[in-house]
Length: 444
Image 1 (cartoon, helix red, strand yellow):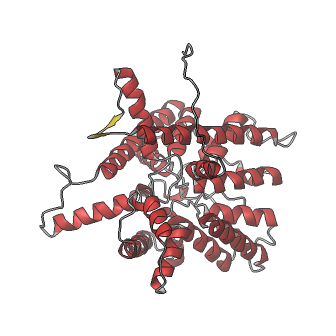
Image 2 (cartoon, rainbow, N blue to C red):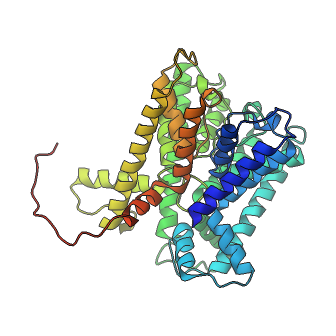
């Protein structure tokens, strides 16, 4: 059912954008309207037209509503509305939302969903006020609200053709965006737990401990992995751009832009530098960061930080000769490992197939960025679409109809997640009631 709500909202948004005759950019084709609506609903941010100059205020409001709904999730909103209307929420809906947001089917649905919506709107409002106060000229009240919601939802849509490059050296603006992006990419469960802990510490109360730990295993894993990825991305981009002499000359400003791009690779899609002019080393590492994405139950896409940590733990266990994959104070179950491997393989296959299809659909005689490796540019675009990031080297506006259709499919599947695709495939299969003899093969 959530899939149909998701597809239906995209369809409605595309029709509204296509039928909107008030935008100054002229009529928009149906495929471009579908592309824009999908990119907004899937909180991706890839754009075939300039959002700020092409669409009217009503069109921008449609896009804003789509990525707000996409960020929180259609399932979250519909379940909350059903509850507020006094209707009975089914056990299946409780379990589905619980596994999606909290990984705990026993949570209090009304209290948690209310906190999710109210907390999200409050963070977005604070972010908008901060942007407006720091630059009232660059960020009007509407622009500040639009960009704040886009940042928290990891949508990456901007009303400016150069995204945020004009604020490349503005520390305050960069910090506000990075905080919003990080908050939206950590996951509602982690934010809820950190907020509860912070409230207890501020009020001088004794925090509710989980043994000897203040935070749960899930939150600790997410926070540590996220910090590691941000720091690693910042270091690699800083030195790669410095050695290639493609980044800002000032070391302090290059450090700020490197930090921002490392954070925004976590499926946010904003940029303070020209992505098309970055070095190949930076682009390769950014593709890895985009593929990993954010955390479970968040606005972000990708295979998620917990999956990356599980894969990292598996490699470490193999190198040490350990049977168990240990992450912090616990070890992963075999079922969890099987899910991680399936997720990784399916995601990698989707990216590989998408890259090959996009490369095969290239128009003969295209001269876009002849000096760069087109295959790498295509892969960057595919990963950005699949992981719902929205970063682009400049390829998106040059896509033809068939290429746009393929990117739309990638954004849709990437937002729903490969796990959903795997579950759908499993639901069509029949259970096998027998086993065959096992044997070994020479491996490696």
